[in-house]
Image (tube, rainbow, N blue to C red; front, side):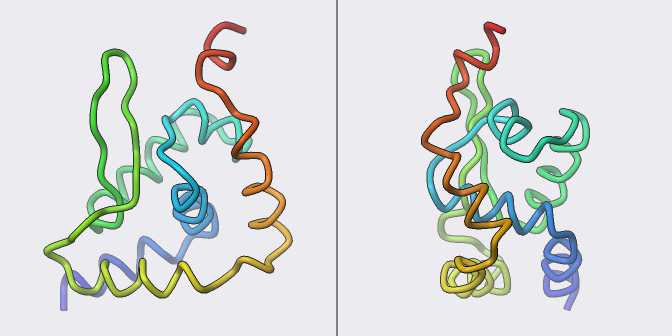
Length: 114
């Protein structure tokens, strides 16, 4: 039951749900997510930590970058099921659709060189 509650709590915040919808599009780093969400970097990092603890996302390091992606095969069946369902939900939500449209235009090199 603990895993189920952790996943539900992680999905209780609209920004965390939006992060998952953005990560459906492609791998993103914190600065790209910050740019898309319009949130402070520490806030984005806290959201990512909650999603990681619920096993909804994974990350990998690539030099200076930390790349976030949706979790692959999770040992948490609740997380895996919710990610499968989330792919079918919210695409018609105006905030989700508007933010997802911006994903192709964010570029970590441009953001960090400002």
